[in-house]
Image (tube, rainbow, N blue to C red; front, side, top):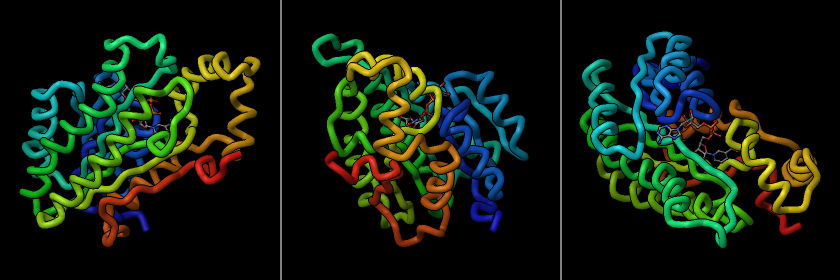
Length: 256
Ligand SMILES: NC(=O)c1ccc[n+]([C@@H]2O[C@H](COP(=O)([O-])OP(=O)(O)OC[C@H]3O[C@@H](n4cnc5c(N)ncnc54)[C@H](O)[C@@H]3O)[C@@H](O)[C@H]2O)c1
């Protein structure tokens, strides 16, 4: 089946590369009209150019006015909004003992404030369109602590909680809200973090790959996450709201 999102208009934030790009391309292949958004306008345009019927708009998810403009773009240009994927996120390995408030906020402002703004301004448009779905990008780090990701993991745990509250408040309006909790997926975010993790864990250069092979059977792919996003975005998940799906090759299933 290649039409799970026929007639649906979807915004994906942070879709210039990585998981957002894979989600935008998958949604487009399933019939959605996609608004590809990213803080990097050239990247957003490049992705949109490859998706039939897609448009693009630069948006820094931390900026309230830009988020309002992004939702207005979807409604004005494509006639409404049915699906929002607040995917934009950043992360960098930093020990708590070396983290100042600016470093904390650099991560939490995108990963939590950006999700709040995405939900806050997309939901009224989705309700006005007669209902739809919101798919948040949390992380398996929402469920456990880990060295170097205090800001990232705290924000992702908050995203899971916010997802549940939004699901509860929006249910009477026909808007379902669910979270994806991926483990380590092969994107630039993870590649850039590897040297920091290796140093902190006492691993040799390249040793992080071996750890991931042992803990989750290798890296997940953006396509793995896009498949799950499609499930939550479409009517295939019609009885799911306020739930979370862990995609981590078993990383979170075992103590050792
Ligand atoms: N890759 C993984 O292993 C993994 C695992 C769990 C969760 N996630 C989450 O998935 C999402 C996507 O991660 P990814 O691996 O594709 O990252 P990535 O670094 O490959 O891509 C992130 C995209 O977000 C954009 N972006 C950054 N700051 C932004 C801002 N303020 N406003 C708008 N766009 C912004 C970047 O320009 C980039 O295009 C993130 O929320 C991340 O935390 C990723």
